[in-house]
Image (cartoon, rainbow, N blue to C red; front, side, top):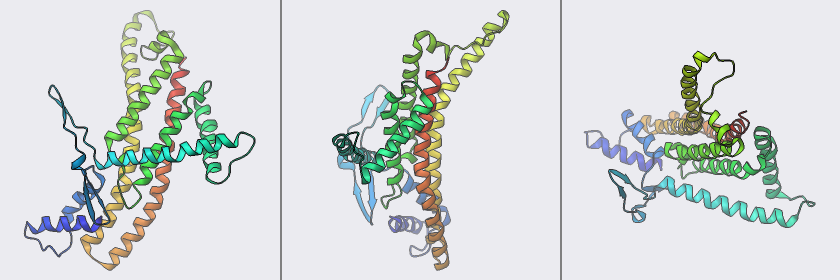
Length: 301
């Protein structure tokens, strides 16, 4: 992927009087990084280009709003990750079901069961409390789906959907709906209303109207802050790591030096190991905070 983009960058520089065989201009480096992080309608892999234009769908026009549902490379990767999750966990569930409760699984099934039990006991039940098991499938789905998207970005394919704000915002929006519905179901209409129209006890009568207006605004912003924090945290961490690695690799083609090549590859390798840890960490944090937010609203009283 990198030499293909370098060729494009040098060809663009040639149009401005630069030597096509020379190093990549420093001002081309941001475009080089954005090209590999951003979304597109083509996939680059091992020096080849595969266009997704054949899969394009006519845009839907709703008044002045245009909705384009044509697949992009990040959409395609998300579908691949979803299919991989189904291919892994459906047979795994069948294997665990056949073994029964008395016989312990072995190998990969044993590792997955240990991880699932850990999430159920230490993440979901600990943070949500009574009735937590009903939310375990949702939290586990979030964790493994985000983890899959994070990890696939570390492969030579290099496409990370979680570095796209549309993807993280959609995940956060789904989580927000689940949180609010869980709170409404646990508290009832009156109890849920108090999570928005909040007035602490002991407020003097003449101060109640003003305090109610202020605290209602604050509580409403607090609800919106939760999904925004989930989306931005995941987006920023995944984008920052990939940007740093691509910047280090791009320096090879900027300076075209053996010394810079060795240094860049060495530093990028260290950061790739760190990115592997971050991929797991960010998926875990997203799942854990989802459990925390569900527990907070279900026990708002």
